[in-house]
Image 1 (cartoon, rainbow, N blue to C red):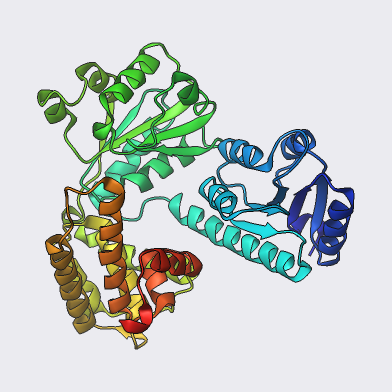
Image 2: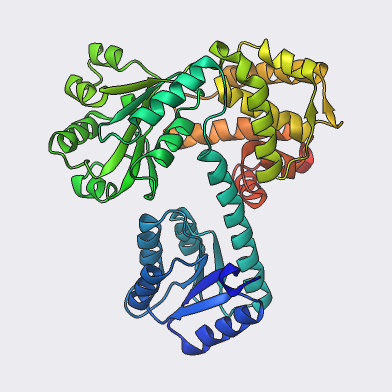
Length: 426
């Protein structure tokens, strides 16, 4: 391996002895290391060369590490940052995690723990890179509907006008947005996703997101009135010109206008270029190719065991109504790979898994969530129901349940403790 192939690590700490010690140890392990003694030099180092990992001290003389963490993650959400502190508290660790830190290491440093933390952080980064690779692939399918859609996407991707993606839940609007970004004029910039909950209500904050980026707004119909008015103002004043703007909706914006929940002027700004993403039931001939794609994705990205889907099994999948579209198919394939016991997935396996998924959906819909509760408490009720179901599906195996839920095992253990779920008593 050449030096240029080795991971690079930026160590930010105001104590020279600690900086030197960490640098020596990491270099002995084969890493390339640069150091910074404060926030200002860390900013400079980051602009000169993007590291694979940043080890960031919290307490420094010019700017605290939490503020710097927030700043760095806003600049590049994909940066991998591990926090270090000699006076850390649980609250500080929680805040750092919320802002995007992947780990929190306490001082005095245990070198074994430091090296383990570095290895885990870089491994998780590699997995995330694989995930991003699959997310930005060309949408899967060779049916006339998908071929036409890809041709339309290629024609409109480099236009500066907003692009509106319409389709049912689970049809793959997010995947098409990623594809449009990859072939658009801002493909070198970041892909920034906003929802009704995360949409900035301040023009300066929104303006800060649009410099050479792709701005993807999911479920645009659910934006608040205040967000819609700000969005409209930014569009009319050409303040969103320096980005690729993609909006998505599973709801009819015309109906929302008629119900007076969506601004008509905003609709006219957004619907100049509209791409309709078809439901899976309208292109079932793509299911075998989608199966192969998802099997490849899960075996490569999530380390699930490879299993072969027989022709009869694939045919059974073609004859399912797929009310949840491609997202439902993906979930079923994940479950079959994780919980299957043989090398081949047969038609009977498909039938049983589809029945279990339907029963689970009905049970979840009928579960006693108290809708009079505040959102946080209602969410906890749902999380409890959801995680108990995943654990029952895996016979209490937390590792398998974590993969079904798309969570890290340590995060799931933490969540189970917070919800007072004892896996030994299931």
